[in-house]
Every structure is written in C-alpha cells, then in structure tokens.
Length: 377
Ligand code: ADP
Ligand code: MG
Image (cartoon, rainbow, N blue to C red; front, side, top):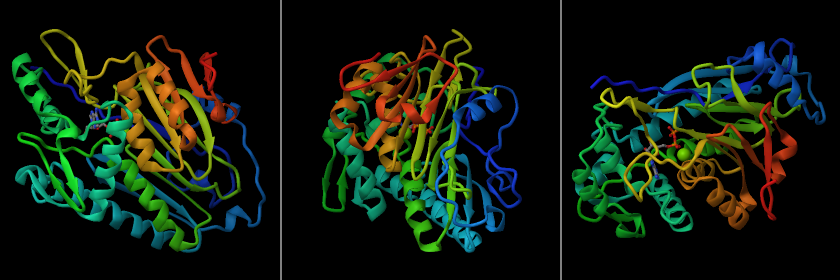
C-alpha cells in the first residue's frame, strides 16, 4: 500500500505587528506576512493595553525542539528569557520521556506492557482529566483507543485499513469505563492500552506557563505542533494573534480559516489533515482521530476544531473530543460546560462557527455563525 502521512502545524502566531528591533516579529516565532494571511492579520486589529516598557529593549530567546513526534517552538521575552527557554525545553523533554508511546521505557509504555502500574503525578493528572472528559463527552474522548491507533498503524507508521473483524474484536476491549484508578495506581482491563496523545501537548503547554511564572517574563508563546499557548501579552502590550490553519487548504501555510486575538490562553486545534494516510486501493483518506464508538476515523462533519482556554490540557482534550462529537453536540457541550473555554469550528461546507464570548476577538473571511446559549445564528 502506498502510504502518505502528513503532519502540519495547525495554528500559527502572526507576528507582523511590530517593526521594533527586539520585538516579537524578530524573535523566531512563525512569522506570516503578505497574501491572505497578511490581510487576515491586518483585519484582526489589536487591543492595546498599557505600555510600561520600551519593547525594543526587551531581550528575547527561542528554541526549536522536536519532541512528542512533532515540531515545537518556545519563545520568551524578558531579562531571563534564555533561562526560561532552557527550563521549558528541559520540561518538554522530561514529559516526552514520560509519556511517549514510541519509547519502550516511558511510563506509558510500562503501564501498557504491564496492564497496570503506579502513575507519576503528571500522568495521574492527565488520566484523571481524560476520565472526566470520557464521562462528560459520552465517551467521545477515550484514551483506551491505543490498541486501535496501533491497528491502524498510527503508532508505527505501518498504515493499513484494518480487517473489520479484527477491529471489532479490539473495539470490544476499549472503553475508559473498564479501567480503574485507585490513588496513583492504574489498572487496565484485558487487552487495553492507553494513549495520552489527545491531551499531552496541551498539558505540556499549560505546564510551561507555570514554569514561566518563575522567570519574570514580559510574555511568551509556545507552539507544540501547531498547538499554541500564550503567556501574558506581546511585548508592546497587544494581544497575540493566532492564525488558524485553513483545513480546506492545509498545504498552504498562510491560508487561515480565521485569526483569534488572545492573551494568557491556549489555542489548540484538531483537524483531520494533521496526520493521515491514503489507502492506495480505494484512494480514501484515513486520519488519526478515532471515533471510539466505531473504531474508525471520526466523520462528524467538522474539518477543524479550535478550543481557546486558559487551561491547555482542557483545550487539547476538548479539541479532540469536539472533533469526534460534531457541531451540534459540541455546541451543546459548550452550553453545559463552557465557562472555561470557547470554540472555533469549521464544517465540511466551509462554514465557520464561534462561541459568542470569543466572537469579538475572532475575524475570518468565511461566513461566521455565532453559537450562543439560545442557538446558532
Ligand atoms: P494532535 O495531537 O495531532 O495535535 P489531537 O489533539 O486531536 O491532535 O490528538 C490526536 C491524538 O489523540 C491521536 O494521535 C491519538 O493519540 C489520540 N486520539 C485519537 N482519537 C482519540 C479519541 N477519540 N479520544 C482520545 N484520544 C484520541
Ligand atoms: Mg487534543
């Protein structure tokens, strides 16, 4: 079978806001200018807050890192920017070693191999949140999809459309309701394995924000495989502007479905175009977000889900969940639980949806519908 697997950055920081030396535009964040992206950036506008320092005098540091099977960028602004970047890099590497299903000696690999084990505080926090999401999303978010991810070849790169019987046999063993957590000990059911890939990068970016508190930074931004989290504001006091990759034109890095302006927020996107393979026999594309009810890649009618929240772990878990749940269920979920997050969705008709509280911070060239408590307009 001819295989193709794409990994794309989903969310880009638009840094074309300042021409001052030493400011954000010169500091190695993904800079997008010109064409549609430039227009999107300009139309996003900027909210000025108080300027207490000359942005041109603020030192910056950045690092490009490959971890968690993706490309990451960390950029910090402040006198201790270099120390902060080094601390962030060390933390990313520590968590990668702990969580990677590709590393035989990681904690997750050990638990999957043994069927049970003692969890570190990091793993316990993620598993606890994953189980809460499993319950509240009606099983759309389910870390026990690991054996299915493996069967499809997403863990090994040996992609294959599974035999239907084999798939349904594995599916019968899945379900986060079948695993047990008792204090810091996890016990998997027969045949189960866990995969924290739907939540780990958001947990990591959230954790980096806590680390940044120790370094007296003016601002910082991390992009973990296109999942962005911003610390404070840009050096000139304005909001960070995140361009969300247009899923209808995924190979054009400067095509956006819209731009969202934020401070102190995670902006985390799930999309089918991130990781997929094409089955040569049928020409059909299979992507990496599985519907735990069927064992097949989710087909909910959504092409892209962005979750904006102060909580990176929640944003990551929910971006995957809402991708599985689809528009109506995601809107309902937001109405029930949305105090801590907002959504930006694109459906397969190219229509864009944003939850009401975020609508003033979001611009798009597409037709934008607003999701409110009352309905969708
Ligand atoms: P990415 O991590 O590629 O940015 P997501 O956050 O949407 O994208 O996570 C996708 C990953 O989540 C998959 O690679 C897999 O590890 C895991 N996953 C896939 N389907 C589910 C699901 N229904 N529930 C929980 N995790 C999932
Ligand atoms: Mg996710």
